[in-house]
Length: 230
Image 1 (cartoon, rainbow, N blue to C red):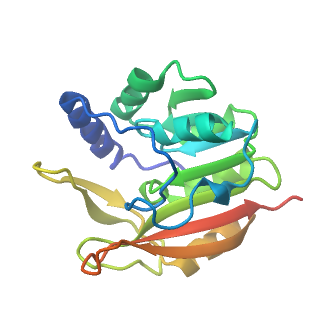
Image 2: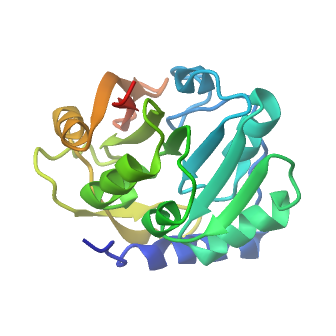
């Protein structure tokens, strides 16, 4: 199976706009898996990653990878298929100790890399065909490695997740800019659990994260899983 590329240009456009604005997100004090500061657990759901090789799937501008390296002592490889997102990461953090950035399809990267001891993605797993991605992670992680990711559950229009592995249209929203059309897999928790089990992972927890504003319909899933083997 090959990875569909319709959405890749969307994130290249997004990254290009951020480069034009000169916007660089600050390195956070904690990992926020949703869109809201302080909501839900932080990096502790990955376990002890000090000295461990960790994969950041869809690392964007790289600030989360840098946090894990600085605050938790991880050795993080950030992989993003978008050349403009990769450029943002290299521009800001290219010399950061304990962090490397790769512009690549994550499955192709995994085929040439040593097995990782942990992997995570912040709101990026819905941007990649899940069957394609999970098959690559199954083969590219060490036995027993934790896999933690967040994914959209309900969007800004109140549209909830699908019970089938189907792609749908979504929008990347930027303040004071026209939204950027993209495609996403927005899947129900039961479907994520089934897919993970089919690819050799044991699901340990799925949590729904909501923002502090009761009028905001957006909900994000936080999925904690582990590759079988130990």
